[in-house]
Length: 336
Image 1: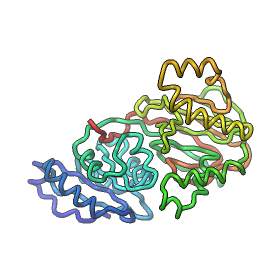
Image 2: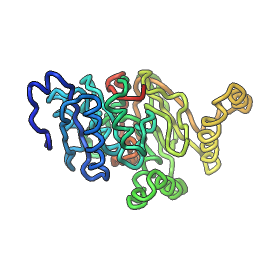
Image 3: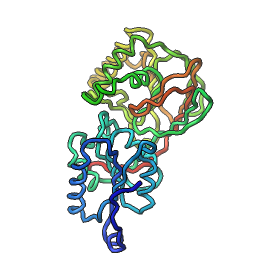
């Protein structure tokens, strides 16, 4: 339900642009946000902003649609990754731009786009004065163990397997205190107890591939907190999905995956000499981590359902999933 909308006069609507703020009232910083938005309104000569709170039943999708129906010029979403994802679902294919003020712990989408995650004022300024950039969205159609089907969107990365188990096991109190570092604690606990599962996947309706995997990740972006470049070639506006298949055979395999992500991707791939070194040492041939790319990927699980996550949030267990790219369907405000 909208709050603090005020009276939208025909004069204001006709002569000045207007923004809407969709915000999670449970997050800290809402009062500072109101002050920052008021200053931006004055600088940019905007009409009074429409303020809409999210609810437990609707984290933002319906609020975004309400703002679009009100005819606002852009929607600023203030909250964590879940709120950002829900508002993006409501704005997809509408042509209405989305600005972001990160108020969560992970803020994966904002970090990948270079949006300030520790400066509320700068994020608001960027939302009001940045440029519009069309980006891709991942659509995940999943099947639950009970046979029901659901559809969700992902902005950064969705995964089936150990990554989702790690997120499901993250201590919520620790996450509040230390942010994304809580995932490290969960990973240390989850990996030794993890067991591979059998899956079949295919890209763009091609040949089926069967393998034992620890996780299959489908990504729009590849940068993770902690300076980890999981998928260095991932681009948010290329109309493609990046798929990562993790299939370590043992603890040594996990060490090789860590070396790949933390050393090869982050350091060696940044230079021509480093890339030559990777080729000479067979870095691109290691099968403990496999990179694929396409417009869609179908994943079926042989056996018990596996944990599923989207953008760092747990989404329960799934028996199968199909991911497709929705090219250039979301407009985001980014730095000039």
